[in-house]
Amino acid sequence: MEKYRINGGRALRGEVEISGAKNAAVAIIPAALLVEGVCRIENIPQISDTDMLLTILAELGAKVSYINKSTIEIDCTHARYQDAPYDLMRKIRASYYLIGSMLGRFGSAKTTMPGGCNFGVRPIDQHIKGMTALGATIDVKNGFIYADAAGGRLRGARIYLDKVSVGATMNIMMAAVLASGRTIIENAAREPHIVDLANFLNSMGADVRGAGTDTIKVNGVDKLHGGSYSIIPDQIEAGTYMVAAAATGGEVLITNVIPKHLECISAKLRETGTIVQEYEDSVLVKGASNLRRVNIKTMPYPGFPTDMQPQMGALLCLARGTSVITEGIYDNRFKYVNELRKMGAEIQVDGRIAIIEGGRRLTGAKVLACDLRAGAAMVIAGLCAAGVTEVEDIHFIERGYENFVGKLQALGADIEMVDVSETVELGDKIISLG
Ligand code: EPU
Image (tube, rainbow, N blue to C red; front, side, top):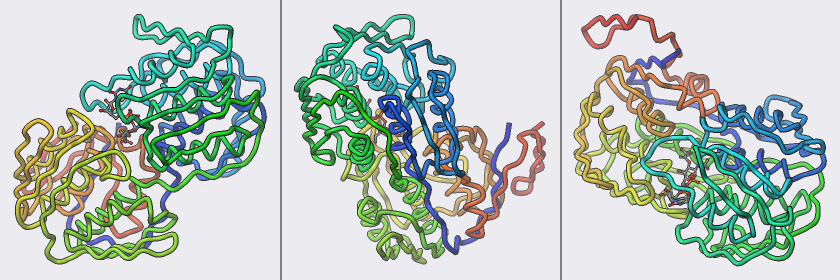
């Protein structure tokens, strides 16, 4: 087991290249199961979530070949319906996409209830509502989800989502591409990765229209064919480096991004006094000497993303004045606050609202990555803190950030991955962690 050790206080400087979007890749990989042919997919992020999904697909009979570190070919021509590796499935959230892709391809699916970060209850009732409307019978028992399409093929339907859900929108889209007839998804989510999945499916012969709006129309086709596709850059990875640059008072050029996808993050950072300059496929972030307080409310895209909320929480500990964060998506996404308090942050949480008394000097401490983005927030706090910070449970972070340590080191951060048993000097105390 490993942890990150950070010696804080260095401003980040230089250039960082953003990898492919995790939340697009974790949908596009299962979607390759719908294709009888070779899908060449570029810009795949090298993270543990994509590794696990590729392993699951290979177990289902897909041939997976790496062309280079970020380009793969997936050939599901000879994939067959069989039991998938459930121990892997229950570790990741995105395994729910196998319900849509297996139902679409085989007319049947058996998956576990999905895993992933714990932000309180994360139901999948809207996924089930959608699959049921498409003619599937769904049975949830003993932690497994069993799905069967009547007559072996789904049929198009009109589906209104009661809640704007990224996962349900993408899952229903996947299930619908090989269904007979037309499916209409209303109150659909509009995130960039939804458009990316639609573009991937269309480049393989599907007929998906309206992705990026709240109404998506899918005209079912009989078969998808192979093709090439390049995944969009990761909006949240980019946002994380933007906040890290701002929080450390550095200057970082973030390349391989789509600035339009970052607008909500850029706008909030500008409110703090940070300078954000947009170019065609990069953004330059220059930290301000005195960060200003801001209020944030997380919302579905194009609102401020919940997946950037913890990182901004860390930054706002440094900003002068009182900031209020309202979490609009999840019930329990403030677990990282306890960890920030260990570093001297002053934050009150009441349900979905956090009140941050800023202007603090954070000090190094031993903290936990409670989940993926909470972990990123602790790293940002550690980069700004005086002294040494150690972040444990980094397997959460490795799920979603490609080469996090290497990219931060290249920006001048004093961060390394060490064995958890190593002894460390925190402040003036020597603590044995063995
Ligand atoms: N919801 C329901 N019923 C459902 C589905 C969702 O009530 O059937 C609720 C959820 O509990 C939540 C809200 O609707 O309160 C939105 O959930 P959504 O379905 O949009 O989230 P998700 O698909 O489970 C994806 C990302 C998350 C990201 C959210 C919101 C993946 C694998 N995960 O989750 O990513 O926070 O969308 O943008 O794509 C992350 O990357 O750190 C991460 C957690």
